[in-house]
Image 1: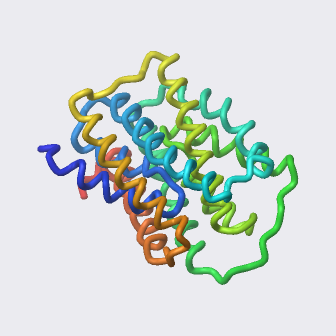
Image 2: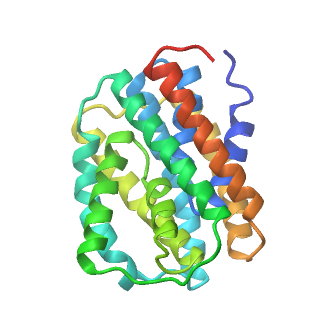
Length: 251
């Protein structure tokens, strides 16, 4: 299949995901798996694209003073080493896509609930709770080959931790540091690979999409529609990965 239209598709994915504080790694994985045959090449490229998008988002959140490292560090300190370890696991392609797809289906449903439920009063978490959440989701991020913010954000919103913009800022930085840790893990394990012909085009596309999505997110526009659309997209991507790559069912 031709890859001529991939930059446009990836631009739109980066726009949707960055508008709610994500990087789009799950959808990059799903789409790249239709065009590329090298499993570790797909994982490596998805992480690179993730890093490009959430670097922009993190910068914009810091600039707009939404970023709060004192609140964020417990989630990060436990997630980074576990994301590194998770990325070094050598899973079969089938097992990888089953884990990723199942996680995305749950995350998509949680994300949809986030936008449908009534707003409740936010509350703070204890240090052990932050550490355990960060560590478990960081390990899943490393294993699945994405930053993990798409798992963390719906959980935090459903549990009413802080406000939605603070959660989006944490998710963006969480994805950044864990994608970097995962990239190091792939490199150490000797499984880091890139399609040099394609990666530059896609990097440019997701940077443009990430800039626009982060701008919309931090201008306090009503992003409910984009959020619901992203939730539906995440659920669909997860279902497709489970059926097509996990169970071998053509859809």
